Amino acid sequence: MGHYHMHKRCSVHRLWFSGIADLVLVMLLFLTGVRAEPSIEIKFELTSGDRIVYYGGTLLERDRHYGILETMFRTRFPNRQLTFRNLAWPGDTVYTQLRPLNFGNMEQHLREQRPSVILVCFGMTEAYQGRAGLDSYTKAYARQLSMLGKLTSRIIVLSPIRQEFLGPPLPDPKTYNDHVALYHAATRQLVAKMKLPYIDLYSYLIPDQRADPPLTENGIHLTRYGYWRLSELLAQQLGLSERWEVTLDFKKKAVISARGTRVENVEWLEEGLRFTAHDQVLPNPAPEGSPADADEQAAQRRLTIDGLPDGQYQLFAENQLVAQGSSVQWSRGIVLVRDSTYQQARKLREIVIEKDILFFHRWRAHNGEYIYGRRSKPGGGNSGNPTFPAEFAELDRLLEEMDRRLDEQAKPRPIHYRLRRVTP
Image (cartoon, rainbow, N blue to C red):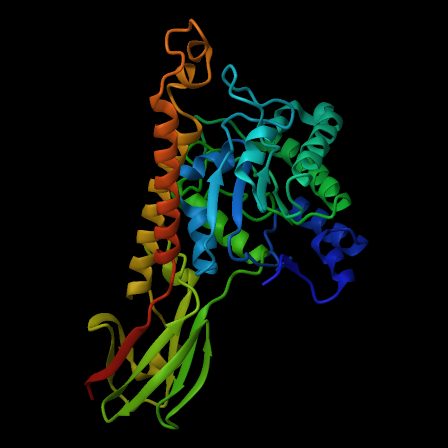
C-alpha cells in the first residue's frame, strides 16, 4: 500500500478541471443546474499506522457528533491500526482561528498530533465576503496549505458546500450560493497549482431543488444523513466505493464472480446452497434518520444466483433470515441490507463517537483556564496542580485503547450463508 497511486505520473492532471473541455462542462453544469455523477479522481489508500487529522471549520468539526466520515474510512481500510483526530473548530477561517488564552496556535497542535494525512475544508464562512474577498481568501488559504505541507505531503482538500434551499422562513440561498461558486472555483484553482487532491462537494452534495429528506438542519449544517451522503461522495471521488457483489450459478454449480469478498466452502444442495464469505471490507450503512430505502439504493452488497428452479427462496446468514425472493428475483440480484456486517459497522460508528467525545475533552478541555490559562500560572489559584499530568496521561491511554477497539471492530468476519427453497 502506498500513498496516492497513479498508473502514470501524467495522470495527476486528471485530478483537476484544467482542460478546456472540462472547464466548459463544469460551466454548463453550473448554468443548467444539472448534477452529473462525479468521476473517480484518485485511488486513495491508507497504510498501517496512518493518522488522519481533520482541519478546518464547522463542516468537519460537527462530524464528531456523528462519526460518519471516520466510519467510512475504517470500513474501507480494515487491519491498518489507524487513528483519527478531529482538530476542526467551529467558525475557523483561513484568516483567523480564535482560541482561549495560552491555548496555542493550530500549527503547534497539528505538529503534536503528527498527522500523516490531513483532511482540510474552508470557504463556507469566507464566502459571505463575496467577490471582494476572493483575493485575500486565496492568499490566506495558500498560506494555510503551505503550513500543512510542512507536516505531511498527503493533504486532501474538500470544497465548500452550497446552502440548501429549505423554503420560508429561511432565506433564499441564491446569493450565497453564487458567492460559494466563486470560492469553490478559486479553491480548485489554488489546489490545482499546489498539486493536491480536491474533492468537489459543491457540485454534487446539495441538490438545486428541495430534498426529501433535507440534508441540512438549517440550510448549512448537515444532518446525520447529510454526512452519510458526504461520506459516500468522498468515497466515490477517492476511488473507495468498493461493492460486495457475488454471482453464483446453481445450475452450473459454479461461482461466476466475487467482488469485495472471497467465497469458499460452497455446497450445492437439492433445495438450495451454502457458502462462506470472507469479506474484504464492511459496508458503510445509512444512519438513523435516512430514507427507509437508503441502504437498498446504495446497493453495497448484492447477491445474484442464476439457474435456480422455480420457487421462493430464503437466505440466512448465521441462521438469521436476511433476504428472500423468487428464483427470478435472485437471478436479477438481491441487495443484502440485514446481515451482520451492517450491525458490525453500526457498532463501529458508535465507538467512533465515543472516541471523539473522549478526544474532545482531551484537546478542548472545558476547564482550560486551570490547565493552560491564567489560573494555571503562579498565583493564579491553581498553580502546579499535580493531578493534571496524570489525568492527561490516563486520557491518552484511553484513546489508545479506543483506537485498538476500533481497529478490531472494523475487521470483517467470515459469514456463513445458506439459501433454501421454501415453496416450489
